[in-house]
Length: 478
Image (tube, rainbow, N blue to C red):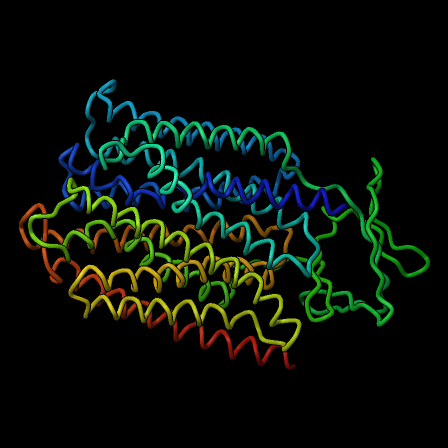
């Protein structure tokens, strides 16, 4: 595989991730939709959570199909792009009045369709690019591509503020129409150009383990080279002690001088349950904050400021951009640090979920004490960083623990958990917010109980991650 091929793969995967993360921009226009359609906070939170649920519930289906039919990636991109385009056009035409004003459940269905399309783009671009890269660079490849998934809200919030603000008010109809069209164009480009790189490898080996997870141990003279795959070529072990096989038939990862050949089912593993709980609790809490930061902001502002106030819309945009930017930066940084620290000082990759959970505990804890909108920026920095850290660290560990052949399927099942976590925390937030009995709640009581629960569940994730770290540390030292 050439540098040009890898660069094209990484670039297209990263740009496609922008189209998969548009649900994170909901807070940019969510309060306006709530006002326009006369939605309660619970109904608004439900609509937002359905967009996220589509992304996550579609994970196992998208992941399984991508693993089963890797050479048909273009079909998944086409389906993903058309679904996102259709969903945003339906919402846009509803805002403009071309379509009748629907029940909030119909609006939620539109966003669920957007989420399903986003899921197809996410898993297809992630898995295709992940397999294209050599094992020693996969954490960086994952961190960068999922970083752009987190950057999506920042990118579209910036575009919205530059081109769709009139008299300091976001033009929701035109903005949503643009979102759909942009995502469709990028999906078409990926369908044409983002494909599995057909290669083969040859590796000198000296031993084959017969443990439950078989490994080939490379000799000190380990050599590896890549050349173009010939049509109809099959795997073979040569008389010289080489393995010659196409990369997409022999799934491999080099870690601690091991080359993994087989995959492990993630379902009966305590490691999988602990990683899944991170996706449920930490990502669920992050989604609650991302989708409701506009309502939280308004609750901390003076009583005469609501979602229609121009200054409020500017602050909403700032928080959406800040959360997205920190999520992006932390994803990329964790991807790089994960590889560098593992190879240079032997730090287990299970260290990074501890960092993410600790940051989320700090962020939720701060929400119990802040009383003005200015300090909310600090919380957005911390929660955005925690959110991005988990999104980067967990898929890396899924590949490390359970292999690459069924990586997209295993990771797809992991991404189901935020659908449940996001819905649970959205429901809790909406119920607590509406205890005040007014349409626009003011003060800490609007969200206090929600973040007490979030702090407790984030602490449980932190303790689980510490257990996983020491468990992994002992395993790698045996």
